[in-house]
Image (cartoon, rainbow, N blue to C red; front, side):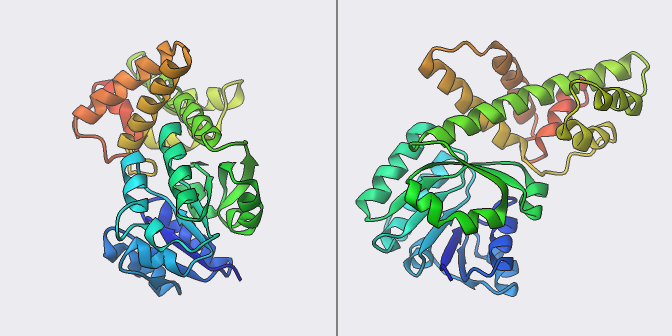
Length: 291
């Protein structure tokens, strides 16, 4: 069985690593906060004190961290994963980063003697727990094929998009659309409330029409009840909107709707809502923005 390492055990990483264990993969885990390795050790994983030591015994190294800076920090340095990467080993980064960061990682993995695959995922905490993420892979095609069984343990659909950078671009486009949908939905809920309409009836109408989608169905009742426990933290959506807008600037595409959505997420972040679910932008839209 392919030996795996998993680096980063946050909201997404922990359930993804657990699904690898359930699928029978021998697994070593590492996290910046060592306490977060305990549930994985209880489930049968080994814990390593550094990313380097976690990578040293692995055929496939998986990374799931919060942003470009964290993705680079995990890879680099004397105790970074690349210092322990075995010749020919695969390095698969699930993190959502910009194409430039992905290109830098691809070059550094190759220089360390490994093979690189970017594989950002579409989905939040629930799909991560259920193993139903959508995996947007790009980079080394042979590594994509080799890692297929492990990718299938964490996702319901995987796509190979070509050279490294394509996965990052696709994920930023997807999350940009999702961020705009969330702000529009928040405005709809807020307007319905101010206009004396019933939120449940609004959601029933939306669910029966052309704009029906799983996000509205899942988040709507929680938002109407004022609940925003984090499944996908708001600060990460703001990061993705920033990166998507930078991509737009790089390719010469105007993104006025994304800019408007981003402004609302920036306001929510400034109001201390960064660690709540990204649906907490509704608090800003509705005028109930206390953290």
